[in-house]
Image (spheres, one colour):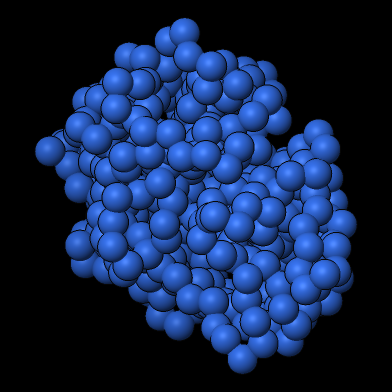
Length: 381
C-alpha cells in the first residue's frame, strides 16, 4: 500500500512537470510551505504559526500570532503583479529577535509615548517600563507586541487573536482581555477591529505598527510617495517627542498634507518640529466626526498602488522612518531596510493622553468595552 502511494505521487509529479502552469503552481506551494515552516516555532513556551487571509482578488495577507503581527500584504500593482507593501521578517524567531522594531505588530497596552513612564489614576501613580529614554514607548519592554497570542482562523477572510494581559504587566493596572480581528474583504480592504475589557480602571491605546512601502517592501525610499492626511492640527512635541499639550495648526508649515504632497518635499525643512523628530514623527489631530471615516491616502507613482486609511480614532501618528538605518534590519528576502525606506500611519488616541487632561481620554473602566476599528484599503491606478 505504501509503495503504491509513493509511485502514484511520483507519477503525478512527473505529469505535472510536463505542464508549465503546474510547475509554477508547485513552486508557489513549495514556497508557501517553506514560509509557513519558518514561522512554525515556539516562543516563550507557546506555539507560533503563520496564518493567511485571501479574497480571490489577487490579494493575500499573512499574520503571525507572535505580537498579532502583520507579516505581509500582497496587493496587485498597476500591471496586476502582486506586490508586498509592508516590511517584516522571514521567520517567527526573527520577529522575536527584533521585537524593538515593532514591524507589523499590535503595540500597547499604550501605543506611542507616555512621559517619564508614569501616569496617575484616582490618586495612585503607576510606574511603567521606560524603553525610550526616560519615556515609555508602545507599552514598554514587556508590551503586547512581544507576546504569543491565541489565534482562531474563522475562515479564509477572518483571523481572531486574543491575549490576556495580567494585572501589573509592564506596570499597567487591571487584568485586560484583548481581542484583535483581522478581516479581508472583496474590495481589498483590511479591517483591524480591536476590543478590550478590564477588571480595574486602566489606560489603553492600541494600534498596529505596520511599516509601509507601496513601491514594494524592498524599495529604498518612501520620499516619492504622495500623502494626504485630513488634519488641520498636530500635537507638537518637546525634545523627547512628548506632546507639549498644545495644538499647532498645519497651515503654512511642512505638516500641511491636506492635499496630496510627496513626503520628501519638505521633510528636511528648517523647522523645529521636524528637527526634533528627525523628520515626521508626529500625531495629527484628525478633522473628522465620530465613527469610521477616511483620514488619509497614500500613492506610489512607481507601482500605482494606492492605500486609503479609515479609522474611528481621533489621531494618527505619521512616522517617516527617520530612525531606520541601513545594515541594521535585514528583512524579508534579505532586503536591507535603510533610512526612510518605510512610513507608518498608526491610528490612535493622542500620545501621553493619561498625563494631558485636555486630550481625549484613554481611561477604560470595569464594565465598559474598548472598541475601535481601522481599515487599510488598497487599489491601483
